[in-house]
Image (cartoon, rainbow, N blue to C red; front, side):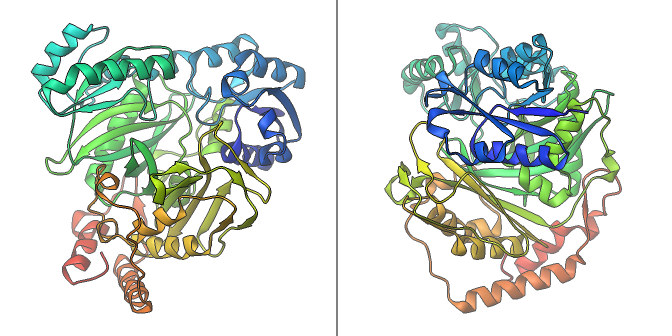
Length: 503
């Protein structure tokens, strides 16, 4: 069993992993930059080591410094969190070379799934459905020819990319060359690799992802789906589990495909298979695999009761999965809002400054994962996400009401945050009905939040109660023994819409 683990990350995810280690009786080591001397994760760890100046490239992205600290501290394993080096095959290999366990997949799996073109070619061998796209290693002239074959609109994507960088939507042929050049420049700057590929743009699509877990003994399971369509510039803002667009039959099918995709690279540890779902055509397509823990993992934990971070640690320690597919069932509905230091009323401009006041929401079904504290300094060095607010309700209506209540209680003084944006989304009719897609945020104007009357809250609460009564508070099984379609949550929810309920 691991005795000491180093967390090669910062902010709320570092705190999350440190807590999981503490609950398993594992000593912890934190690393920090000069800008993070007083950060929360530094205070939580048993030991903490300075690794460099504030810029990531001089601290959190320095493989040599992190391995050096790991050796000095005598750790058994390193957890990378997400972002930074979490999907860096070189880092995983460096850990192995140093005799330190990397809490994640093998360097080979990271490399294969990290390159988006290679990932497409790999999963295609397992009959995973793909969005029509281009092959690997094509030059500009060849890409232009493929673009004409695919047709417009299409997407240009960085092969080594993620997070929306090196990505361009092209709607007309005359825009293709300039968009291609811009995508290559951005990809080279962000990833040191300017290779790009093309995919047909699925308009009005939903972003659905499947969480998978796999051990070293040949066992792979999935934990159901997450709905991640509320995005701005390809960055997720709100996630939920399960998805209002997925029924029991589709969940089982997509889950099986996700498991096959993971097994195609002999995947071990926690990972996520991302899909685009065309609700009009009722078709889904493989998008990519994230070979790490996801920001939105808490919503899956809330509905399944599976502690994904603890499972990561156990798997890396050589243990078998504690769950079989038929053991996994989702109960209730969970929603997560990413709290960022951005001003939604000023086109999401970054907000810097010091947190002068902090009051986090509490109560039944409310979970906060945060890097914030009074005196926290918001800077431009790192990602603006500083906290995640997660709620669990008996059903989607109750989860929305609980999130509205929790957001109204959240108080952060001294800096601007994205909380007003999330409040507007929770009040949106389109979101409440669950009819949104990935273009939802781009079609909205922030600043038009409706101040609902107490009558609205009362009617919504009654609707939530009626839905809960009809559902009988039963679990939605993720693997095996699903209820029949005639007894599905989704069909009953549809009847509630027809009867004029909240949904």
